[in-house]
Image (cartoon, rainbow, N blue to C red; front, side):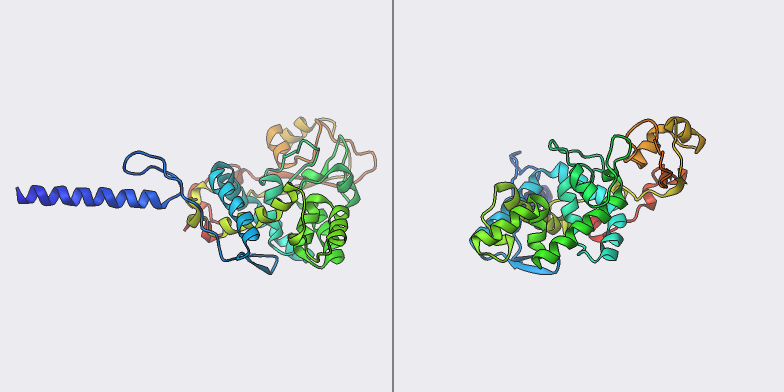
Length: 316
């Protein structure tokens, strides 16, 4: 009888411990089968582009809280951003560094497009950096029905860097640069002058732009310590970087599907790697050089054991 009582007590203790562990997470159920909802931790401060923002002022703290809650409970979208970051951050980070733009702007890119190269907004903004047609052309991108370099990861990143550096030369404040990326430099400049502020963080703006800066900081906070916010991944669950060979062409291509077959890939693989090719052919009357990516076959197939997290914190 004594042994049975002890065994029962141990089992109950283990069950209670399990319930407590479940309750500490962001998702799950308690011992009664009820859904557990936990408010995410709000940090004392947040940093962006080397600038620190203390979150002890009520409005700043609550704006940050809103975005942390949003990312934690729209968890499918956040989880996919972390997975995709393992593929795209290694491509974008060296370009940001080369161009003298703070590394944290990769989180702005993630906010803009959820790291989906093919993203097109209802307003017509396209690509990872969500350039509008006119803005893309202004910063050196070719944009037409045949070629749309807003979907070219490297070229659009360089164009974004040019925009960001130009904005920084105007404001001298990276918070304002981020706000201008969302609302436009004209609007932010007018509001800074009208409201007598030196940083966009203290401006009274429309809801979208007001939230935008805190969405960037919240996503950065989560992606730097995803386990603290309920996101648990293994290396095998991340999307690996893809390796390509580059084929340069200076003439048109009548049939991209035939050209793809000649280079050992499917039409789908060709278009997926080169989303800037907008049609079924490439028109090139000017003799311009285009670099077309061809995925290497060893990179086209998953090897879960070979996937290395770009940021070790993603898979602790």
